[in-house]
Image (cartoon, rainbow, N blue to C red):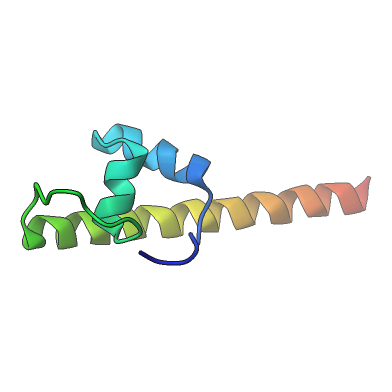
Amino acid sequence: MRDSLPFSPVSLQLIAKPLGFDLNELLIIAGYLSPESPSLSEEQRNKIRTEVNTLLERVVSDNNRIKEIVNRLLMTS
């Protein structure tokens, strides 16, 4: 199991639900939690891990853009 998460659990929940997973399932697939019993093949896990990482990168990018916009708005006020 990895020591820390590089994202907000709330952000991850927003991604997990549309994919049909709960937070723990997604964390297991992404390699942040140890699986209790593997139900997906390694190929399936790798595909989902790639998709999750792509979605997380988008969430982080959008979050950073929102912060930049808010900061600019605060500076012009």
